[in-house]
Length: 134
Length: 284
Image 1 (cartoon, each protein chain N blue to C red):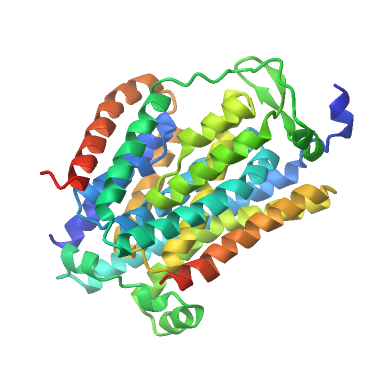
Image 2: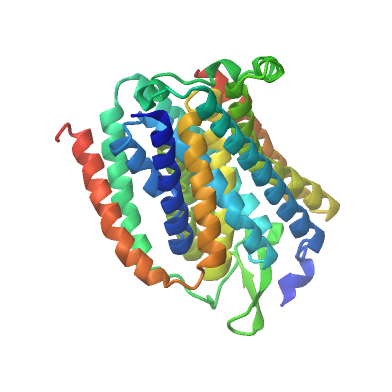
């Protein structure tokens, strides 16, 4: 296989191991926060109904970073749930960051540039496009 | 409805979606979205936001197994994300604008049509187990879009190379739009592009699609979360249920016949698609 000599070859084992750790930790943290937050929310709002939940979005005030930090400091459950959703969202983004690291370490300039562009687009979605259409 | 019961029913819905999704490879979104809209009365962008959160949970739950078997091609997946991520941003923005313009009915009809489009691809996968005579294009060679995995069923290592990256990028952009717009993973479309155009072996296509679905969903979910269309009291229980269901499906019941599950599940999907379209048309 002549192309194989020019090809970069498989990524190191460490890339797969690191990504597995990122997935496990990210998902575990997200589910623990969401599960705990949900139980606490039901415990403190025993008379809430689905209609109230659907009519209002209880996290809207905690979407900015400053609002989230203030909400967490004040012990707000809504801020806590927002943090859990963010953890779920950040997990694949961290996979992309891990990819950039390993493509660079592997000397693959084109792939690390592509992966960096994917990361930039993901951050654009979360930090620019979403807030703009709020 | 009492909020506790509502949350419990959402957990169960997520559990079923995660279980069926991981057993059939359909992903949980196609089950969760129509159920949220039809049975729970969730408005469209909020349902899409919850759907994308469940997809993030499924992809992260099942992704570790694919990584362990070295079936996920990180290079090919990352390369194609350059098309799916912009697609997802366009799709999620479109959903918000259409909902603002009171065009929810049009979104419902479009969702129903997308569900119907997914059905044939779910019944039979015509991908090749081990494609032969694949000619990689120039871009594929330049980026090294090729790899090797150990096929335990065949008992040997299998080499593969990616072909036709141009049409694959086009299909991936479309898959991203569908994902961001309707809150589904769009795995059927991704696998189609990976198998038909790049001509990857089925196992690599499935694993790489799973990886890509998570990154694509992060783009759409990022837009919808930051725009305030993710309701945690809807998204959190569905996501937890989906993760539990996907874990059960991938770890405890991997031997349950895929075909049986599909035959049971597909009529349900068709009924949901019909119901969603009828809602969109304003019929009871």
